[in-house]
Image (cartoon, rainbow, N blue to C red; front, side, top):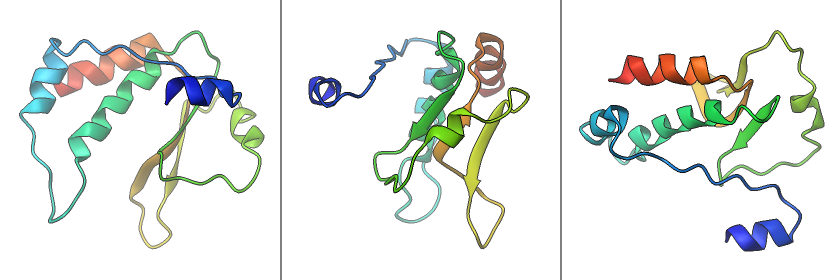
Length: 116
């Protein structure tokens, strides 16, 4: 799949995960919440997006998201915005299927520490 995406012109960054780290041990002990809910603990692995410090801005889309317009405005958010995400129209719940963030190793370490 990665090679197909690269051939299609996508920039693909494979993020190696240290599954021996304390954060993974903690996450593996968590359980899904809600009947039929997808693995919300798997979504917590998104904190590793903050490790992509070689980029000024990262736009993350879940595989079930469909972009119907240009994503350029997401990369052009003011530098003072550390993270942006979608919310559901009927509530203020965060939808982590779309994230725009400014990578930071310090932020990653803070989030990892809060999970251990």
